[in-house]
Length: 232
Image (cartoon, rainbow, N blue to C red; front, side, top):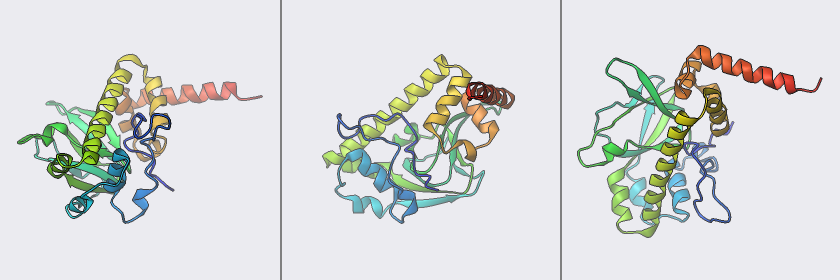
């Protein structure tokens, strides 16, 4: 199965041409090759080959995780951009009383970072752990920033990456504030069609902000509605 159908499954902003928006949900199966996922993602954002790519390629580090292992925890120095080559990861905020709030999931082709950790002396504000065996590419943000100081293509990469972050954050806030739990669940299925079978009911419920029992009721209600519309 080709699981490379997402760059974080965000909105599909117009990346290259206004008349033919390039979906950020396709990177042509990069995870099935030996080529770095990072290159496919970054060139997609640039809409061009990237000058100085060899400088980046030589510094990419692979991180292999087992289910339940952390890529990083809150409060760490992690000035990197991460690209998922294999597996699914969960990003979480943790409260002082031990509660967990799911920020997002990241499947193959996704890229993410803790923006606070990209600042000099900054630290991560959330934790990331693997939900299944995972391989993640780790790229030094300082190098990307230095290349952006020299080349227009790399400037486009960073600008569009931050735009995607903003689009994603705004949409998440809007969904939580204006949609019902059932609407959020339906949106999740549309935006992440490959993830439901790869994450637990508990985690999915936490993401859409209902209890696991509440999610089961939503699923049953949707199923009943579908059956009632089926031809007799």
